[in-house]
Image (cartoon, rainbow, N blue to C red; front, side, top):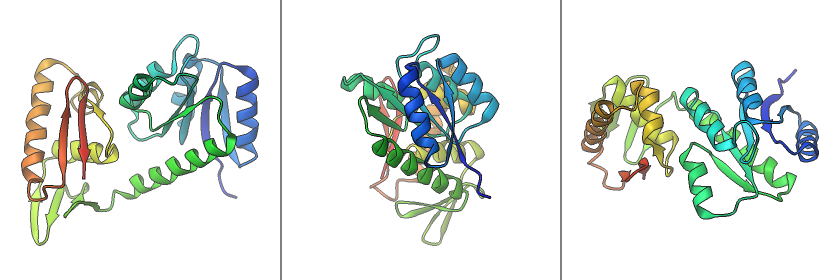
Length: 227
C-alpha cells in the first residue's frame, strides 16, 4: 500500500483550513492542520512532513517567521505561502526567507494541488541529485565533491561542495546569507560571513570556464546562482 504524502497545513481561519484539508485528503494527501505558527512548528518537528502550506498572517508565530525557523533545520522541505497580501515586497520577502511558492487568496484548490505536485516533483529531483548534476557545461558530483568539465576533474572541498549544492537547490532564487551561514558554519557572525565570501570567490573561479554560470551578490540579502 502506497504511503500518503504528509503535509502540514497552517491556517488560522477554521473554515478555510478545513476545506483545504478535506480537499487535499481526497487526493490522498495526509494533512496535519494547525491553527497557529507555534503549533505548526511543533508538528513539523514531530512529524517531518514532505511539504508545508503556511498562511502568512497567523497568531503566535506568522508564516514568514515560521519558515525562517524551519529553514535553519531543513533546507529542502518545500514551503508554499498562502496570503491575502499582494505587495511585491511581501512576495520577495517570502522567497528570501526560503519559500518555494506563493499563492494569493482567494485561490482555487486545483491551482494549489498543481503547485504542490510541482514542488514534490522538484523535491524528488533534488533527492535524486545525489547523482551527478548538470551545471552548465559542468557535471557536479556532490558525493565525490568534484566538478567535471569535459575530461578535466576539478576537486572541491566539503564546504565548497555543500555551498554549491545549496546554491543549485535554490537556482534563480536568493539564498539568504544568514540562513546559509547558520546551516553550514553554525553562526552568522562577521568572521564566518567573511569566510563564506572567500568560498564564493573560490567557487566562481572554479566555474569561470562557463560564462553562462553566475553567482550573483544580492546586496543585503545573499547570493543567487543563475545558469
